[in-house]
Amino acid sequence: MLTRLFTLEYSLWFDWLLPALQKMGAPIPLGGTSNFFRTGTLISAGGWDPYNVTEDADLGLRLARLGYRVEVIGSTTFEEANCRLGNWMRQRSRWLKGYLQTWIVHMRRPQRIIATTGWRGFLAVQLFVAGNVFSAIINPIMWSAFLFWALWRPTGLHGLLPAPLVWLNLFALLAGNLLFILTMMIGPLKRGWLNLAPYSLTAPAYWLLSSLAAYKALWQVFRRPHYWEKTDHVISEAARKRREVALAEFFDDQPPYDRRRNDIDNTFGPCRPALSKNERARQ
Image (cartoon, rainbow, N blue to C red; front, side, top):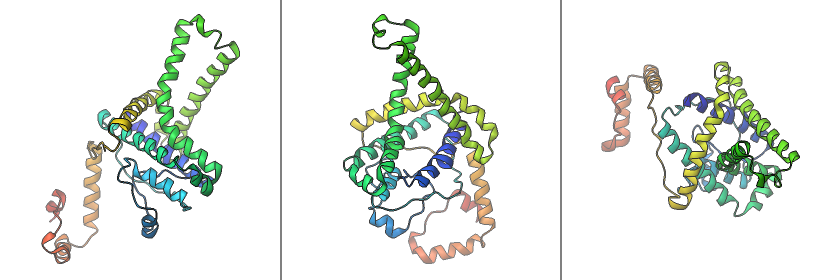
């Protein structure tokens, strides 16, 4: 279930939302995989911020602030979907903490983003960077308030919540959640993954996990702002098999490996890089 929802989320983000930001000319918070830079541009932008734990998103905003354009190419990175809850929580809290750091840093001089991307780009930063964190933090608070009102109907709230406002809130609750579920559902359609679409109905439970990660991130912003929570990779059986197949295909398409080993010896001298287990087996 976790990997399916993770895939739905990635598909929505990379196949729909980021291309939409590109079309708007808005800043694009870069993801952590498959980014290609012109070296000179990367150097002029200052490279990665070693103190920001979501450094790619920060770099995407910095490039936009300097007037550079980022475009999304049609490609696929076979990144493993996180299949362990603890591992997922560490990764997500780091991402949210980095998004919060990025937003705080760039809002020190918001006029720079407005000057290069206009108000549309500025609002996109609020929605896709700050909004990611704020919505995760506010979500359980809003649900708790709604359940408290629905179950106990406290008389003290009658004056604060007149009937028209109550109906407006109920419409926002139902329509808003259905809209977000719909966006999760259309995410995989672009890739033809129709079998994944029904799992979007369980997205509210996934959002609750994101809220737990957001509160952890908020705590770490004050107590451990630069602590980088490591994410374990290649932990599922499917990912390990895919890696082995990819390595086998790669080496089968290359010249004999011992010939390339001589090139490595000549290039690095005594500092020749160590060989992995698969490379040794291939030799």
